Structures are given as C-alpha cells and as structure tokens.
Length: 429
Ligand SMILES: *Cc1c(COP(=O)(O)O)cnc(C)c1O
Image (cartoon, rainbow, N blue to C red; front, top):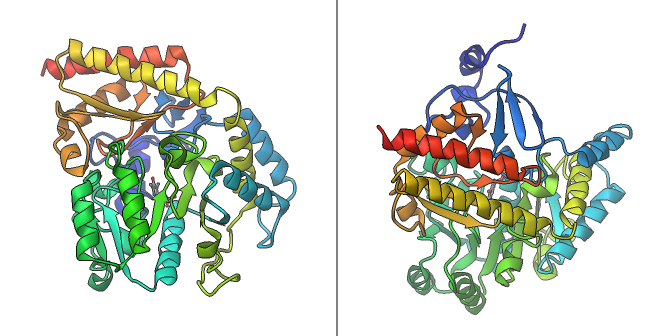
C-alpha cells in the first residue's frame, strides 16, 4: 500500500528522531507537512501524492545537473554491472583525484571520504598535527558538518532550529573552538592577537551558504590568508558547498585566494555520498599511510560515488556551463526583486553564481547577526505559498537555494510569477 505524506510522517515520528534522518527535512522552521519524495527528473521532483515541484534545493546543492541526468545515470548503470564496493583501489579513484587536482591547483594531494563532515573533521586533525596546536577558529553561522569541534555557533540546521551549541560536545573541545563574526576583519585580527601563534587552523566557508548565502567582503579572504600565513595557522577553505558551484574551481578560483587545505563534497559526488580533503603535499603527507595522522573509511572512494562524480565534473567542463547558470540565476534574482518591490515586501537577495538567498529584511545581510534579523515567519509564509504553487525552496531562511542546468528560462519565469503571487499574499495579510 502506498502511504501518503501525512501517514508516512506519523509513522516516521515513531521510528526516527523527529521523523527524519537530517533535521531540516522536518520543516519545523516553515511549517506544513514534510515532503516525501517519490522521484526526481531534471529540475523537478514529484512527491508521493503525485504533486510536482520545481526544485531549488537540489539535495542541498549536489545536483547541479538536476535530477537523473541521463549521462550520470548511464555512468552509474555501467558501474552497477561491475560491483558496488571492493575496499580496494580502483582506477576511477585515481582519475577523480586527478580531476580534483586539475580544478583546484592548491590541492596537491587529496583523500576521498564519504561526507563533508568527515572531510572537515579530518582536515582539522591534519592541521592540529602539523602545527602541534589545538585551538581552531571558525566563523559564526558557518557550518562545517557536525563533528564536535565544529558544532560551535554553527549554521545550517543549528541556525534553523535556533539551537544553542549542541549538548554532547565536551566543553574541553568546545573551548578550543574560537568564533568570530563572518566578514569582520577587525574581530579576526583581534582573535589572532589574543591567540597569538596558538591557532592550529582557521576554517571558513569562503562564500557562506549555511546562514543563507553571504558573499565575502572585498579583502576579507585576503586578510585571512595573510594572518594565517603570518602565524603558521593552516587556512582551510570549506568548499563542500562552493566547490564546483560558484566556479568550477570553487571560491578559491573566483576570489583568487589559495588556502592550505580544502574540503569538498556535494557536487563532486554527483548526488551520491562523498567528500574529500586535500591541499599542500607537506600537510597531506602527514595522513596515514604516508604519515602518522590516522583517517580511514570502509566505503571511501566508493565506485558509484566516484563514477557519478567523474561524469558530473566532465559535464561541468562544457564551455559556457557556468556562464549560462549564472545568467539564469541573475534573471531569477532580478525577477524576485522586482516582484518584491511591486508588492512592497522588504527583501534583500544575496547571490553568488547559482546560489542565492532571499532574506526577508530591508537591511544588507553580511554576517550571521544581520541574517538573523530576517523575518523568519514571513519566510515561512513565502515558503508555503511557493509550495502551494509547485515551487520547492529550501525550508529555512538560513539555507541557500540553488539552480541547476536542468532549469529552463520557462522554469525561471514560472518561479517569478509564483513568487509574485506569494509576495502579494504576504503583503495583504
Ligand atoms: C553540507 C556541508 C558540510 C557537511 O557535509 P555533509 O556531507 O552533509 O556531512 C560541510 N560544510 C559545508 C560548507 C556544507 O555546506
């Protein structure tokens, strides 16, 4: 028997914490029944009731080619005939490592893992081992996965649910994590002064996506680069979201700043579970078995994930791919702005490439504090109004929306019309 969303969620609530396997899927911040998806194709997903939605979540970023891209599916089908996992090396892993290195010149050596969380956790371990220091610095509202050291003033679901720092993280570890506001070079300098030569690593989303989309201010990443270099602190760019998204070579290509270590995930797995960390050979050669820093994974370099990733990257290298995606995103954002103005809804839209966030505030959003000024109740109403019109946006004010190459001009026009109606409904309340 096919259960409907409502019944499925009731059943899931008995079986899984909050009824979900990742917090924001429960739609707590926006209200309404959580989505149960039956299938996806191109820019659209279909739920178990048969309703179709234009998808701006795209599995939270990975599906830059849309759902079920025929060539990615074909690559997966081929692998399925040869085996799903061996726990031994395969040729495709070497090829993917080569493609990652070609895309990111700062990555001299790379290790594949199974998630972004694993990647950032391992990168921190390398930084601590290399420097012999324990403190790390991160930015408020940035999310780097859910490992203990990084779950301090974190963005994403932590921000969405308005949680204080998570219980269960040992105080001794949390105390080693220093936080400063994103985009605040003065606070950054002060932190480097106070923790002089004690910071093992500074980790940053070079374009923040997990407090909603927030671009780095001019000079911010460069200042970070200089300060880290001066004090021998390992600079980690967490490009799990931005890698292959804001440009093929990520934010480091877009802004021309080279980190010491980079973490990747999402797009590089083409929608399958994956992650990677890499960087300077001197750092990465500390990782076992080349060096003493232990990190391993039963399914790391999984043939399915690697095949989907390789095919995805190949398609992203098509001439004009990013230019077209950026133009589509710009059209959508311009349309949303015009509709919001027409309905007199206070809206600030941040966009970098094909990631963007409409914040329900008149003020500029440059960090977590200004993001939090957004009217989350208005966002919730906007989300539900869009959903009624067959448009699926991220179910949180503090998550970025994405466009895929499967989105068409018509899809964008349809979305702008739906948003116009949603803004009007908001303004009439
Ligand atoms: C999604 C994300 C992660 C975590 O990746 P998972 O695969 O969900 O563990 C880490 N950092 C950033 C910037 C992310 O967007």
